[in-house]
Image 1 (spheres, rainbow, N blue to C red):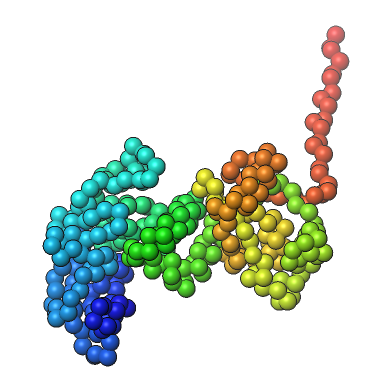
Image 2 (image 1 turned 180 degrees about the horizontal axis):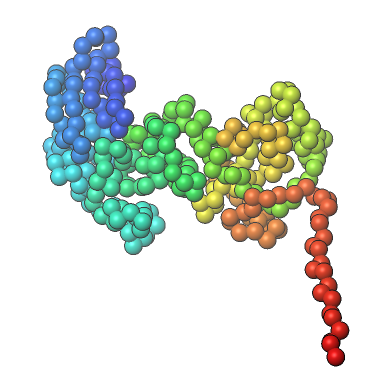
Length: 320
């Protein structure tokens, strides 16, 4: 929905790629704009009695040049190519390239030359962004590590775009969607597997906090009995080097003991929080772990099985 300077309100229905194919004025039953788009963005309008500048993938089309403003750079729907090469804030030989996919090596190509399936987010050919859009639209995902990278990048882009106060199409709409948080939590929960920043955990919670004075087993029982829900046990995590690492191990263990799968956990992204990042670093260093963390944790004080010694091999007497 968009209100123009005249005060008139228009509605912009979109297709699965975010293109605004029709436009309806509030209070009217007929469309004032109706068009189709060719795969690379060329417009074929049927009805056009009102001004419509937000077209291919909902990006603003310049009335003088006909090029589309994707935020990071301009796109020519006539040529099906970007007007400038892709770039990244951190210098890279081939920005955002996936060496397993030769199409990503072309820095002028539109979404790997497959615009009928994928939508570009804001002018960068990010494979993780395309995968995220795919997941939110169709429930299809790729790898856990790619998802972790997507969440980390998206969090950073979210802050940046909020400062810019500029709508960059699909990315901003995803962030404002109520389904966004749901899908994020489900996919992140499934992605973590889970991974921890420490090797052991205490059977009792600390004397401060939500579960002060309780044990992991007690919280797990409350979850099984329905006295608590997964939403009452938030799991803080940080994405570091593409790995999703849980900060509050005891809470995660309570959920695990209650038989609640990670896809149903209430995940809270603490990436970028100074205190949380310092806490994670301390946990990793104190446990001799890298940023990959560990998937196995044991309760403190748990008896460790002593390694079994190999049986002695009897030495037979020499035959005379």
